Length: 402
Image (tube, rainbow, N blue to C red; front, side):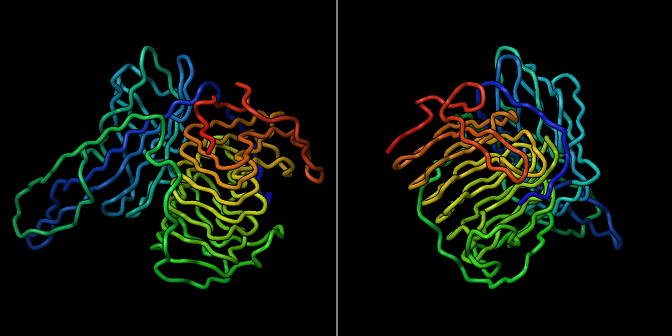
């Protein structure tokens, strides 16, 4: 589907490097005195995933996903310190300042509200010299956080106290933790849903199976099962036929641990007109997509990691004939494909890029197919395929053939 407008573009270049720092955090914040001399404690808890998505000589791009594991937040401030002199040059999804090596990111006017379990993903372009290690710890709203989700408690004491436990885990690798392989999940129940559900900034499906929109076929312009707001997260969902056009991300979004038993029109469509939009598909899998799994109609960058696909046409397609043309980017890491024709289809005349690492394919699969994008009403023309160092980035060591 093509619903977007907008023209701003951002080009990513260079070799792919992925550095992930996962910091799970929890701490009891300073006490607040309430009526009757009772002291209440607000629980601060979060997870931060820091991922370098693209790196070249002297520069890099990164996403920083903050997931709130504690009480709901109306505003948030995220802080970290670089250890090798790196510098943030440009940021989207947050307002930043940098003093020396310390970076402070504050929410924008539209993404300050962060409910329990919700995520937000500021992204940035930065510069480096010598080395580019990931930060080892993060602060959220002034609290150095570690451990597991905090809990709200009360005390009859009027004194101020703070309880903190600290555990920090930093992981540096070639990408995410999984390889997009493993058992398919069993649902915990089913939900018959015949109209689109707008889930706002966060939805946890509890691993229930959702179905009921559309006819289960490839007909265009079917409604989605779920609509995710800009900056929102949907997770722990199983979609089954008929599931219409799957999930629509209206802006930057996170799709975590979502499984499609049978892909209808598309599994998910990414719609933002902003060149700084970032979409993360983390974990999960899709089966039976006679055409494509993920449709990128808007602008920005789609990252697909730790994902498995079975019996599909294309895992990802950058729209080649939408009413508005954008520069689009996709990053795949830790993906396993079975009986799938193509991993990514991109439009080189519009400057699209596709980057691959830790890919496993069973059978005959084209990794990166290049097209010439055309105006709406025409059909894109295939012009080639394979790594070229300009639009399609991978080396033989990135692909394992089974």
